[in-house]
Image 1 (cartoon, rainbow, N blue to C red):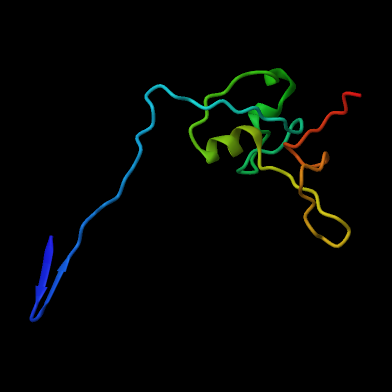
Image 2 (cartoon, rainbow, N blue to C red):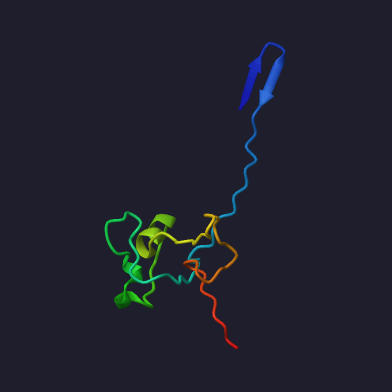
Length: 100
């Protein structure tokens, strides 16, 4: 495509490069979460957090599916309301075990 003005010629060239996903590739993630959490909409219990569904695999296709199934993540804060990060064991989804 070329745009032409008096004394100026502009060419637009799309050099985008996208790597197609391999067909049939599905990532697997493991979620550790609290029991009986509220779903993302706040209207009930997230189905992936009940005792009856513990250990059940789910096929999720979006971040919204993840939040609807396992609830919104909960990150704790300290007494000054600063978020506690870095794999702290009390944060939802970051469960550390001492195997000593």
